[in-house]
Image (cartoon, rainbow, N blue to C red; front, side):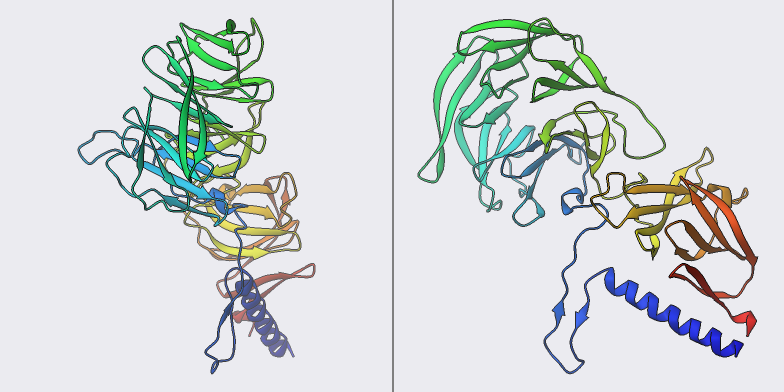
Length: 440
């Protein structure tokens, strides 16, 4: 009877693993003699969207348009060590994929790029170029517009700068091609400016942030700025600035004070901090910024708190995985994955369990559980089997089969058995099951 029960449990475990595998990717459907095969659709589970899956080398600028295009400018560099902003990547919301503009002599020293009305504009060596968003392989077209080091398109307005002026153009589409009409020139010397939602011009000069009211042709000081500003943007009633000291904000109006909201910090996670914030844009009510030091694009709330949004291929953050992730287990409400964790002072990378809620609408979906207490001074543990419920974790490592209760992000041992012959482990309907061939 015991042999028969163990045999049944083995069959059950094989069936469960087979089902879990079919849910994790595309499934081939059809008879062996049927030439027609159907691939079931898949979607990204972790991270929560395809937008966050892209390999970045050194992102410097980022823009998000009202059409849903995200345009990333990267600082790659040549083989001889010279530095160029020579890669422009575009996330197309219609295809839900990234594509890069092919190498071209004009894609060098690019400080900014953005999408507008189906065109990708970029500034290279003081000249403004564009390509069609749906045909990135076409030869870039040079416009008659020049600018020293930045440009901005907002609605029907294009803002550029020279050595000592700001120039505003009206931009429109004429015969399926963009056209430009110069509207006004302002004697402002600045390396950073933008047009606000009220069509006023905010610009930096002489350690101060100014607002130029176009309607009255008058300027006033918004705030004194003692930091070296990289990029600026606005959201609702505030101006946001990135610098080597962090991310700052200042309320619109006269005589305001600048406020640090996201300082330069480091921690054991590869995400959730900023080291060198550069280009910044507003996307769905959050500030999305490029950081070339940690090779990622992240998002913070208007108050400076990090969200779980990040564009990067791998990470030890609790809401991402590394390329060493393995051992997937599902419970009623969660997915568990064994993955690499943070390194200690000796360079040992501890394993961890990443738990993600299956319901994507839950605000705090992620939990990272360190397995460091299981190491007992050893450099590595050999995790062979993993099974999890909503509240407990079963793990077979080394010669131990252990069940832990999950309390916050720590593990409390509730069962342990020493064995060299456990062959399968799974969770089903409130119970953990395992097979041990030594029992035979």
